[in-house]
Figure: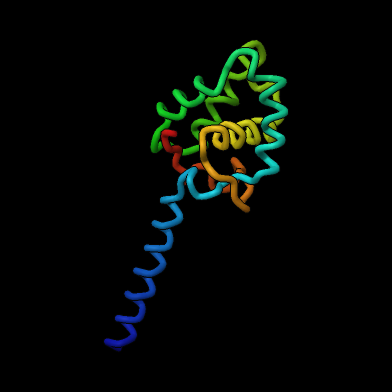
Length: 127
């Protein structure tokens, strides 16, 4: 009985540490794909670049430091483009976020950035 309790406690600790590691993901961990960056550049060039250069987004990323990427995505979705907020497709907003992150030095990876799958557990970092 005593050994069974030790095994259960050890497995519980391992599971909790893995959950904690998943929550510690940042934009440095390849949380978007190169394809999203390419698609995001097209949307950015057509819908964002007339009003915002990358310096603007570098400052925005600083204000979201250690906050979930989802919060940044929601803010962009709710306020941009300034003349018609929310007018882009959800994937387009996600791709623009990937492009902005890439342009600020964060690496692409194999995982697709998805607001329905874990963006709330990925932390923004200042460039």
